[in-house]
Amino acid sequence: MTKLDSFVAAQGDRMLDELKQLLRIPSVSTSPDHAGDCRRAAEWVADHLRALGCPSVELVASETHPVVVADGPRVPGKPTVLVYGHYDVQPPEPLELWDSPPYEPTIRNGNLYARGATDDKGQFFAVVKAFEAVMRSGKPPVNVRFLIEGQEESGSDILFGLLEKRPELVEADVAIVADTQYWAPGWPAIEVGLRGICYGEITVRTAKGDLHSGLYGGVAPNAHDTLVRILAKLKSSSGRINIPGLYEAVKRPAKVERDAWKKLPFNERRFMREEVGAKALTGLSRYSVFERLWGLPTFEIHGIVGGFTAHGAKTVIPAEATAKVSLRLVPNQRVKTVERLLKRAVKDLAPPYADVSVTFIHGADPVLVSIDHPAFGVIDEAFREVEGRGVVFTRSGGSIPVVPVLGKRGAAVMMAGLGLPDDRLHAPNEKLGVDQFLKGVRVFGRFLTALGR
Ligand code: BES
Ligand code: MN
Ligand code: MN
Image (tube, rainbow, N blue to C red; front, top):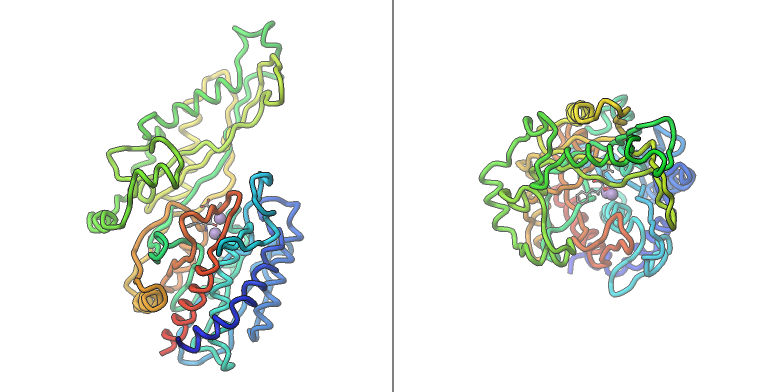
């Protein structure tokens, strides 16, 4: 056992107690009702980093969802590590499906249950605790800058604005993003790609107001009927998205990368039954599941608003209907272009009698990172020591909007997460394995120390 390991063994419970404090703050960024909680979470993180010995800690760019920018002590001649994370979380609803309340962090069977446990409070806090561990002698082995934002779950506009004004904030040798996942228990992963996203709303209006479905049914246009016909045309049952031009920019993963994916331990049937919990997998079946998840765009309908959905029956022809939709984007596609293509496709599919509009809500560009920086060998070795296995290289179908910008000034972007595939992020009973957290502190502690050599 190294000194680092015995420190973590001795201090692990205290570290978890601190994490629980942060998890008790309901910092949901997608709802203005929680602006005060987001501010409180930012202050908690800032106070914590100050107490750990960061000589410079700022809350910047917003009153309600500030970015925490904190620098560790300067160590001249040593590399700089940028630590990215987000203190905001997704809404916890439906509450009745949680076995313990989302903001009362609870440990059961070796897992810490709470909203934000894995996404992302528990993960970035593991890096914070690794920093604490290597700071014990007073001087860290490398320069560390924390960049912890509070708006990742709603598009990161504030952080984008900040980095436009102060691009030097991402000047670093390595940027650690601990907001992703292991491949499987015991299989740490470096994610080399993320999909992007283009999220919006399609609204259809077909009449001045709602109408009696008996008196007018048969002649009056129905907004929901019109909307679902448009939606149905946007994607065929084979999984092909019918947005002209959408696939033009798509850059297929190289054969070597696809071949490497074939070597990942994976049981498609079990994935379908247990992880997805479904009787079939959909999408373009001539592509592998991995290529469908990581290398191809998607079109999803998240919900349809309007009309009558209350208990019982109401005979009405709705005059307005709105669908929340998003596309996931893959390397080489751009949010701006896809937004334009979606708007045009919807317009072209709309019947002349309907007023149809598309409103953009938020977006993120996809990203692919290069792994030829020596830091990737260092993290691989750290995982090897702690986990008994080095990293596998995967991608993720999820999005982290700021990641493409983190590498703009030359930093090697290292997406090394601690989550497990069954962590249920964004869903009820989100959790983080206590051992995943503690192993993470040891891995990142080793990483920071070794990078300083
Ligand atoms: N941390 C996730 C994304 C993620 C999860 C990446 C697992 C890789 C592995 C992030 O917090 C997230 O949920 N992002 C949102 C994007 C956003 C703009 C709403 C997403 O992907 O839906
Ligand atoms: Mn996240
Ligand atoms: Mn998330």
